[in-house]
Image (tube, rainbow, N blue to C red):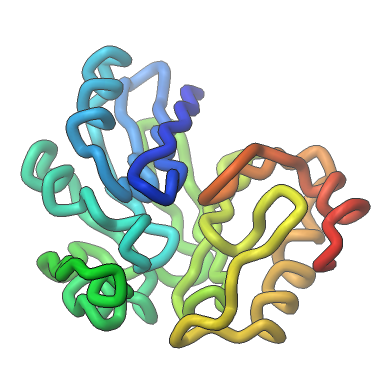
Length: 205
């Protein structure tokens, strides 16, 4: 499996390319900005985009969705409870940042337990509300892509519309910390970690 991390945009949101070495199909997770940079990396890796997957609907994670969709034709996927954030600048916080990001509705609405295929690579959807109502994490074997739910030594903000600190902590403890300790955590911002490290050292948990 191929995993590429591309920090994009002013807030350096981590965009992930998750590729299948056998079929050269890939999922692009959270293309928040810099579509050209993401597409260049895909071309160098000789990967074809099978899915554009959003861990949640905030502006710094969806900013390049339109350009990526136009360039690749790949389906855009987001959890049903964050779906309006793709089309509504007030909901995705871009209006708050002085922009007006609005895209076409998602091609596919995700739910807990769904599986997204990128060639022979399967991404399992784990619904982890708290940062937003429709925040998800993506489990790929022993790799976990956590969006803005869980960071290395930190957790996502819960003070935006749809956020809840209690719900966020419950999501992390009931759905993420139960995974094997050697599960590698790829967060929406910052450095990687493991579930074991976060169990022992995350001050919020």
